[in-house]
Each structure stands twice: as C-alpha cells, then as structure tokens.
Length: 200
Length: 287
Image (cartoon, rainbow over all chains, first blue to last red; front, side, top):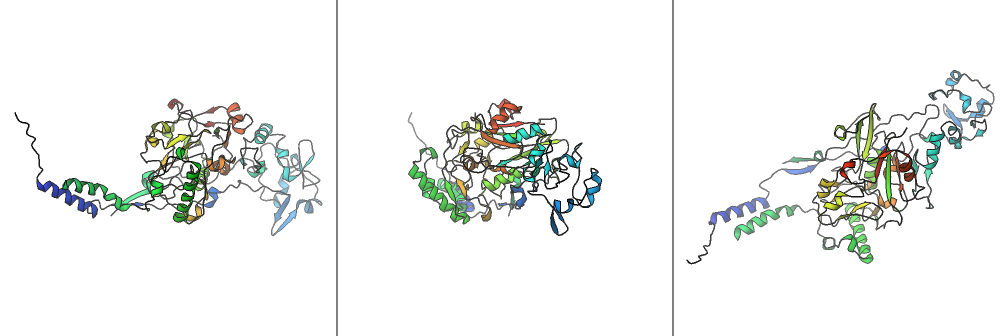
C-alpha cells in the first residue's frame, strides 16, 4: 500500500470568491451603516462648583431697597419686642421655622443687634456664629469639629501647610429655617448604548 | 494561497479607519512597573506633547508615588446624600472623562427607603427637586477593594493595586478585553468605546500618569480616588463639591483621622459583602 498524499486543490472559483470579498471589504460595499456618536449637552457650571448652598453673612447688615444698612442704625431707636410678628415688615425675607426655638432673643442681643447671644447671654460676633449653635446642638458641633459633619475643603493630611476650610453652620443651614432645602439634581446619565446610533 | 491573501486583506480592512497617527515609542513602551525614572520622564514629556497636539492645552503630567504609611478609605453618609449628582460631574471635570460618549465613574442609585434591594434601584431618575420623599440615594464608584476581582482577571497585568490601596490602570498596557469590567461586582470600570471627546476649555491640566491624563479609544478607566490630589494630601473632587458634606475621606492608618472616627463610631456596612471583595468604601446611616 503506497502512501499517496493526495493534494486537494480547491477549485479556482473559491479563490475568486475570496478576492471579490476582499475587494468588497476594502471598498466598503458591505455594512453601509456607520457608527455615530450622539453629542451630549454640557452640564451647567453650578453642578461642578464648590460653593456652599448659602452665602453666610460675615458681618451684620441688611439690605433694604437699594441700600445696605448696619443693624444698629435702625435698632438704636427701636424698643425690643418679643413678638416676632412685628418685624416682618422690614425683614420680609426671614422665615421662622426653627421648631420651638422661635424667640428672637434666644440668639440675638436685644440691645446690640450687631452681635449674637450665646446660652449664657454673652455676645458672639456674626463671624463666629457657630458658637451660638453649639450650645443646643452639642453632638452635631462635636462631629463638625472632628470633620465628619459638614464639608471640609482642602487637605485630609493635616500636617500639610495648606489651608483646610471648614464651612460654618450657616453656610448650609438658614439659621431661622435650618432644615436643608431640596436642590435641583444634575441630568440623568444615559445607558451606554444610547451614546451611539447607526446610520448609512 | 490567493484565497488566503484575500481573506487576510478582508480581515485587515478595519485598519483603514485608524484615527490617530502611529507612534512607535508609545506602541513599544514598557509596562509602568518596568520603566526607569529617566524613561518615565521621557514618557511624561511625550504625553504632554500629545495632549498639546490633541487638545491645545499645556498639561502638567506627573508620576506621583504613593505616600508612606497611608491607606485610603472612604465613607459615605446615606442620611445626608440628596442625590444631586454634583459628585458625578465634579469627578468628570477633574478626571478628564469623555463627554461624548458619556463616561461617568460615579453612579448615583435611588433606592426605596427601608430596602437594600439593588435590583429595584433607579439609575436614571430625572426630577425637579431632590431628595424625594421615601427614597435614599447611594452613589457607587470604584471601592478600591482589598481583594480586587478586576486585578485577578486581567490577562496582561495592566491593572494592579498600589501600596496605598488605590487600584490603578496603565492605560498604555491595557488591551481593552474588558474582563475587569465583567469581573467587577459594582460596575466600577468604564470602557472607551470611541475616541474620548473633551471640550478644550474643560480639560484639567493637572494630570498624573496613572489617573487623569486623557485616555485613548479601547482602554479601561475608573475612579482612582483622585490620586493626583489625594497623594498630595488633598481631598478628592467628589468630596469637595458635595453640598451636604456626606463624604469622608482620609488615611485609615491614622487613628486621629476623620475616616477612623467614622469607622470606629458609626455603624458602617459595605455593598455585596457576599462577593468577598473587602472594599475600602463604607456606607452608613446617621441621625
């Protein structure tokens, strides 16, 4: 028995089919549809800004009409009243919603409106207003001092010389209506495949 | 033979659509762990030139090494998160992620209060105001697991975990097989299906080799805890933008850090504990 290795020669037409396929792929005859990417709209700048929700008052002043006044310029001449319904005319923008803490002079000095009052009656400047909040909200104040309540900005590595800024209470909480207000969310993400569409 | 050549030409026809020029140096670059400091300096210069060419932005690309005695951990207060998605977009801006197609490392999931059923969570909520009544919001990003399944499955070792806990990717070594994306239980990994498109004015020029330099089509990317910031002692971008301050980050080996306080005093939990990944990202509910 002789080992005849029979050469199996494919017929010539198979080679022609492959050459035609090659030419058709090179010339993009098949698969007309190309992939396009949908343009996503840019996100609004407010969604990437590090600003806190409120802009806390650094110094005591009020805007009435076009002018900004120091508090004592009016309150020098006004007798203090404990009835909070009376002040709404000049300070319309203040909404009172602090639970049972709705007496003005729990936090404000009757005789000097440019200072706040802590639990012992001592004056506290507006720039250190957290010293007023701490007397009733002790656990939150403790957490804030450690850095787990509120938001620090800067360095987790406290040995670095860089500045770490901790937002004060009123940078997020309106002192008269402290509950955190709902915000507008950024737009929803798209499913991955919806980034693309196929067209001729 | 003719049919063989024909088939080979047909198979190579997609090369017609090669977009960027061919850079031999980039193609033959060694793995990150094998690069000497001089070679690394050359690589960084080459990347800066490429960014200049593609985006017209003068970038500062550095190779930032991990800090000694530091292991990062992250905690998120679910009682405070309102689902505003500001962390998502701050991350996109900081880390030069593609805008079209859209890539976002962080995904905020809206869950029904009282339930931890992730399958009922909503990813694409689109409402006027958040938070909505009866729901809580859970942002998910790469947890930098202590037993990372993505590192285990990478066939080319393009991804590994650094000594400070961050799992990183060498974008020039990644072949784009997406095994890591399949292995991750949290869907932390994102793939570039197309050449990333970033508007020139939105590029963040402070870049690092392992994190936020612009990627190419066909490589994986993910959250790196902003290592270009955190390895220099700063907070990550998602923490600094959060309006409610629900995020806490730091060095868990430091007993006086904020993250240590959270892990010691709050009742933290992790996602998909049964997967055994031991993540470094903890969630908790607070009063």
